[in-house]
Length: 233
Image 1 (cartoon, rainbow, N blue to C red):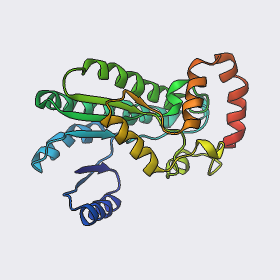
Image 2: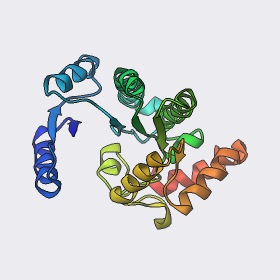
Image 3: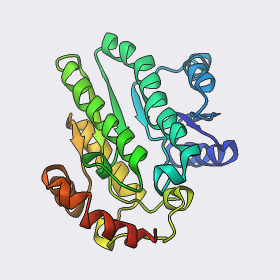
């Protein structure tokens, strides 16, 4: 297992737990995926450790809450992490998977990928890219032995909300919230079944269905106003 994130100390603690509990080898590298040079260096570091990537999980990502004109500085960073790094790592490892005839890629998108999202405009757009990209590549991979799954959770109880600048700790109704463990389980089970898209939780599946097919006049009007109030904007 090869773990990548920005905070090396926390990565090493996680790797130690995984090795102790599951008897596996867990390697770590601290990298900022907003930096293209650090992203480009990752495949070489994996090779240096003598590892092959058979399952790739692109989970890195962040959001900024608020209108684009009020938060101009963080928008391109979201594109670099949520889109550019994801495509770079996918294209780095996918050819070898296809050549071996086995492998899986899990791309973490979001329920937000199903609709334009005022107050999270760039984040929603990046996640729509992830879902669209993943579904298209999934079709390209038919018959190769390799799968690609877009995992589209709703709100998850992690540090994401705090880091994104939400003014409320748990915005939105409780029935759409999931734990990280439940989302991870749904993603793994979906990948094992070769699913193109996985939306964990019945409430989130119903929400995604409405947001995908509902009238944009409602989604961008009254629903957007309700969402602003729900998150404290």
